[in-house]
Length: 192
Image: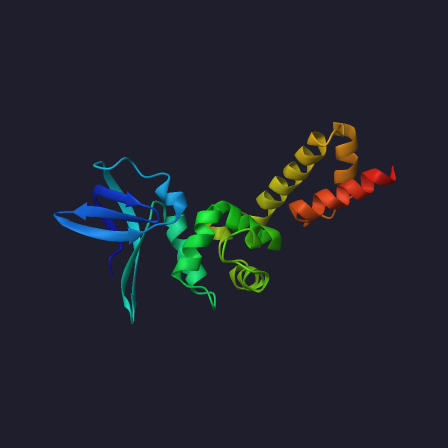
């Protein structure tokens, strides 16, 4: 119903803002990723919105990017996930990180978000699989490359040289997550 608002940013009280549009102040709840990128009070801004009507009221949610709004709407489709939890997920993870976590089926990343337990994280991974990658531009191959780079960086930070890290990386499965990959690489390196 309300797809976009352009106006003057009147108030910022996380996670809520007030956007004044032609004399009308719209209260919007925004994820922290949007909140941190907003201009100062009194500046003009444009937000994409999601309008929700529930029994207890009408709610408006704002996003700076189409990817954030799309991810929010996909999160709402997951059973047991409401708007507050969806905002919490987008506040704790960028859309790219969420897409990568789903693509790699990394439960650990999602559990770190406040309000997300193991069962909810498992449901998110199951129901979002294949739904975020196209819109966010995060492919499984890109996510795997990022994971391999993260594992390699961790090994180098732990004092292993590039040759040792590369040797361990060759023995890891292609679809392994970051934390599991680091653990597996350390096991491989401890046997040498």
